[in-house]
Image (cartoon, rainbow, N blue to C red; front, top):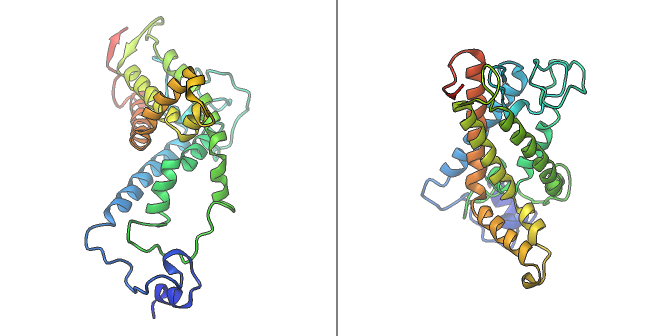
Length: 277
């Protein structure tokens, strides 16, 4: 007898494996390619994780001194290990060992914000943890304990990661503004500025579309009519929230694209297309 069948027969599991459910030995009766969506999701997340990990530990080609381009993977750069000019907020930390990314202060919080994001929970629960993998497809886990113990209890800290993400978005905005720098000084504008600004705008859209942000702006209001300003803000956040999944994937792409562009310009592989100075 298969493991799912034993779980149903003995009633030792929960959900589709409970004794009260129909005893269907097959994992699913679906004949369509239900596995394609979780496969693509897993592949997309894996590409970003591998790329971001390599670049975070690479410690090279993250700063273009001539135009002040700084990749978001290394911002803020706060140690003596950072190349001259890339530390926009000083260097309160000394030299860092090679196993520590130069963006060590922001990366853990950004990772926490993404991992606990309501959309990403859905994405990796279904595609990586297979809980559940798709509608009418039994998950391979006999029991579900919920987000009540480590490590999933950390999901409850999402709202706090959101506050830090706001600060990091401000830092990225500051970096993008400083990048309007000419090769000989003064104001300058190039294709790199377009890439950095688009990335920052989309990061703001993703951050503000967060469910926690929507709750903060109007989640506790009982009478919208008594709080017209907060209600208006809540409606605008709600519009963004409807596109939260799209923004979640888009910003993964723009983060990699922005970092790749800065890396190529910094390494000399390509030249920045300049419009002014």
